[in-house]
Length: 356
Image (cartoon, rainbow, N blue to C red; front, side):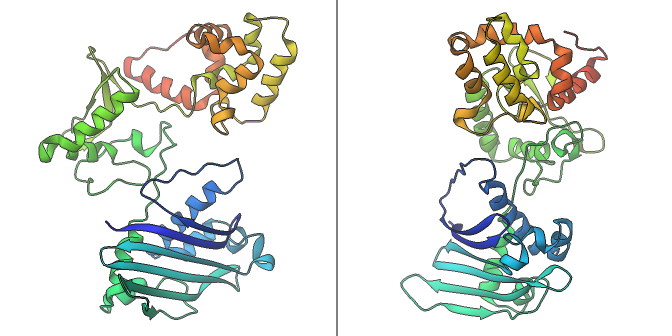
C-alpha cells in the first residue's frame, strides 16, 4: 500500500521544525495556536502547487511574509521532505522554497529520489532551482519514473475540510451524479459519491457507511438520494420509522455549547451561585459564538459547566433541555448562527417557523 510515512518540515508558518513519523491513522492534539491547522495548511499548499497554482496560493495567503516562520528576516526559507512507502522501496520528495523579490517564494531546490528495498543508495533526479512552479509534471512527461510516481502520490495528499455546513456550503447543494470519481475537499459531491457506492459491488461499501453512522446515531435509517431530471442529486436522509426527509445538520461540538448562549440560565439550578455563573459568562465572552467553545477533551462545554456546577453531570439529559428552555430558542438562534441556518432550512421545507 502506498502511503506517506514521514514528513520533515521547517520554517512554515508557526512551525519552526518538525519531523513526524506517520501511520495509516494520525490524530493531532494540541492547544489553540499549537500549529495543528498550519500543518494541515501545508498540505493545502501542496494541493495548489500540484495544480500549478503555487504563486496564486502565496498571493491569497498574504504573500511569503505570512508563510515563513516569523517572516523572511527570521526565516528566509521553507524546507520540507515527504517520504512515501511504496511497494518496492521509498520515494522521497524534497523541496526548499526561498524568499524572493516581490515577497514571494521560488524553488531553491527540488529533488526526487527513490531507494529500493534492500539498498542504501538512492536514485536521484534534480529538478533545478529558480523556478516559480513545481517541475514534477514536466519531469513525469519526460518519462522519469520517480517523477511519475511522486506526481501520483502528491496528487493524492488531499485536504478534506467538512466544518462548513451552512446554507451555502457545498455539501448542502445539489451536484451532478457523474461527479463521483473521488471526494471533493469540501464534500460538495458527497451525495453523488454515496449514490455510486450504493449502486456498485452490491452496495457493500455503502452498507458499511450506513452501519458506521448507526453506531453513533441509532435513529438513522438511510440516505435519500434521488436524482432529478437534470441528473443532479442532493444529500438528504431519513430517520427510522419515519417517512420525513431531513437535510444534514452537523453540530460543531456538544449540545451544552448552546447553554453558553446565556449562562444566566444556571440560576434555575442555583440562583445563589453568582461567581460560577460569572465564570461561565467569562468563557462565553471569549468566543465569537458558543458553538466554538471546545479547546480539547477537558475543556469541552459540558466539562466547563461541570467544573462550576458538578451536579449538572449527574442528570445532563434532564437539566440540559430545562436550561435551554430557560434561555429560549430565539436567543440560542441569535447566538448560534450554524444552528440558526439549519433551522432556517427546516422552516423552508414546511413553510412554517419554529418557535420556542
